[in-house]
Amino acid sequence: MTPNPPALELRAVTAGYDRSAPVVREASLTVAGGEAVGLLGPSGCGKSTLAKVAALLHRPYAGTVHLGGVQARGWRHRAPRAQRTAVGVVFQQPRLAADPRLTLAALIAEPLRATGRKTEALTRTGELAGSVGLGTDLLGRRPHEVSDGQLQRACLARALALRPRVLVCDEMTAMLDASTTAALVAVVEEYRELTGAALLAVGHDRTLLERWCDRTVDMPGIALPARAPAPGPNR
Amino acid sequence: MSQGTDAPEPLLSVRDLSVRFGMRGGREIAAVTDVSLEVAHGECLALVGESGCGKSVLASALLGLLPGNARVGGSALLSGPRPGETTDLLAADEATLARTVRGRRVGLVPQSPAAHLTPVRTVRSHLAETVRELTGAKGRALATATAAAARRAAFPADHLDRYPHQLSGGLAQRAATALALVGEAPLLLADEPTTGLDRDLVERTVDELRGHADAGRGLLIITHDLAAAERIADRVAVMYAGRVVELAEGRGFFGAPGPRHPYARGLLDALPERAFRPIPGMPPELGDLPAGCAFAPRCARADATCATVPALSGTVACHHPVPAPEPAGHGLRPEGSRT
Image (cartoon, rainbow over the protein chains, first blue to last red):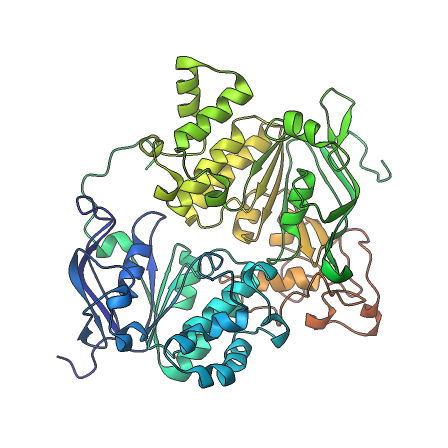
């Protein structure tokens, strides 16, 4: 073991939604502490699946995930809380990632309340919202009353609420305009500077990820190509 | 027509389009205000702007798809169905829109394909229904036409029997694009057609759309993807807080001399291949717009005159636009400048 284990390590991960035809085959990826890695790949190549595995949200068929050198022992609700909360996730579509019944304030505070920190939720919600540029006037609204950009800001604030050591951003800005993209990336970088958190940014925008991350890796390059893809005319 | 755009009749001519949403408690949302624009046959107009600026509401208004609490003003004349005739899309009744306009004269490439597709039906079933309704094809011809429709949007044939939830975001978008192209409508309205696609697919999708413009159709593409807009747009309309603040030729806008409105400049500067610098702050609430120029609170050039709304004079609606002939000290020579 090295003295400084990587913040996130995926070893020969095979995962998917059909055991006979996994989407990702034997993919390995390492993100060092404080490092920002961009994971690039075309649509449908399995990069989001890999991101879900890294965030302990999807159990792989084979392979292991290590967070700060400790092997993950469970996925989803079975993941130990310390590991589950060490990873913050921001998804591509904020509308699908936000409970429509919650106000933005409740949405941002949800991780704090879920881990039994109600009092902290009261004090930190405003601060978290401020850090992503959301004014207090928006915090009482529900998702349908704000724009995609504003909702994604709230989702980012939620991901930062438990001060994760690893942040996984799966196409965080794919729905957003250039200015909001630059603003959200700036928020992530500010947080990482402050805390030394590592970043796995998943996307297909090479220009963006090369500008944002320390290095980028291409998805087909880190996984075995899926078995005999059908020789369709357009793929 | 009041403006000097004589020559051929534009395919779509939008004049002073405004959309207001009446909310509970008498509150009013000014989603679109006094928008005037034209799309000619064979032309691609890109409508760009931040999320929540009213772009998609404009598209919904043109298709008569606004909710019941919307009040619409102005006109949107679509040429046809016969030469010399026009249909006002804002005044047409639902039967006209449903039977003769949507899909046949105006094709829509929607923003959220996952929501656009019926979850319990396969892509093939969606396509076959649309082909049958719009072309009357039956039997073997229907199967062939369905496969051809999928191919035009680069939808892989081996995925045709999948349900929407089995598709990646990119494939769902291509399915929706394929549906929009079936009717061969003279005007295509593409509302964020490239969201969630990777760069290669973005380029293929917009090139396909561009191909329809080159074949004589009009294309109004609503997008926040400036790279996609740059690739295919003849002209660019920049929207901010419900108003068009700049209307410019695509080449001059993305190249030299660049945009003249400070907001449009900021938008381009936010690109990762440029300064990667966000515009400070967020767009204003459409229900609570400032009295004057809506961009003034975020604008470095703002002063006292910005307390009144600037009119769209020429190509730009700003009291302090970037001067036209000078490319702001980049040492670039603007195209067509007097030397």
